[in-house]
Image (tube, one colour):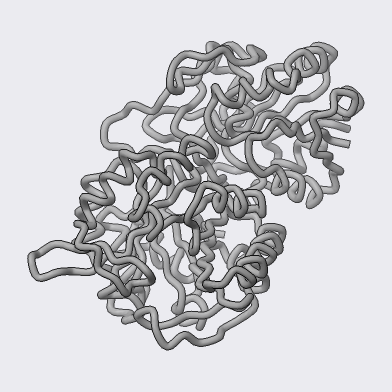
Length: 252
Length: 202
């Protein structure tokens, strides 16, 4: 039986893993290679790295780290952050990534999804969406690290991403990100019901029940950062908990 | 020495690294002499079936693969590389494969399932083989694919996963082996499978 996935996410800046709240107050945490290996051995189902650096020089440091992490882990590895053209996909895939997550650049140029899916296969194209609730009972797509509202409807954008060839959607709720009060269940349920590609829920994990809740409404995977980094939740404990909740998981 | 066929279908380094984990020396190559001399050949691959076949033709590798398979050398296809071992695929059209194992590559069609079949699924043993030594039903491997193999003879399937249909995970016909999932991305279970692969070489 196909299991639900638990995915630790690491934000990398200047070669270090960092984690902020609501995209701000960023704090230094750890060495990405050590942390990557730790999660791989602990039973994480995948690993996601976001490059949150902006400058060109830092980009090379990041690629170097991707190579080292890819050598250290034996689970699927997704890279995001700063991906804006097909060439960027090629670079990180060649460095050892299995999937590439694209966000703002796909909003500006949706054809990027199609081009990348045709060139490298839909399985490696993850459309990452930063969504925030508006006052009309729906969600808007934000870009540039959550700073700019595009006014685009998040559900429609996810649907379009699927049609353009994305293999997976990662939905990050800005409202719940870093707050640790649970994932946005309504948003994740709507997307899971509507789409035929897998959904990764992101933003809001604080306790084990939060994972269980979002996986039960239909998300195929749940992503989290700080609860894992600070060892508030151990992946092995979480898998046992989910197993007892009758959610299919891979336990190691 | 194990030749990992380099035909421009994505990064092959992860396969190379995982071979190293089990003490196998890999070489990423499209040199026919190296393929002829290799102890075994691994055909990896991600992306679209037709592109992959086109690239095998472009690098003039099909005759070399055919000749090596004919003389009994072990060939392991991984993911798309496994699908290429069959007669044909219906991915975005109808395309001929290498025809080492009779059967076709078809799309998942069951209503309500998510496509791609993406994530960790458990292997169910269909028939005993040294390839699945120490592999139990609770052992999970990492799949990511939208099309699956439908072999003419299900006895060519060593292990499968359940995903609306019986999805062949490991296939074998004589010296030709295929793995639909990624052993190099399947943690300790993947390494056990590569160890088993190593043992059948000796």
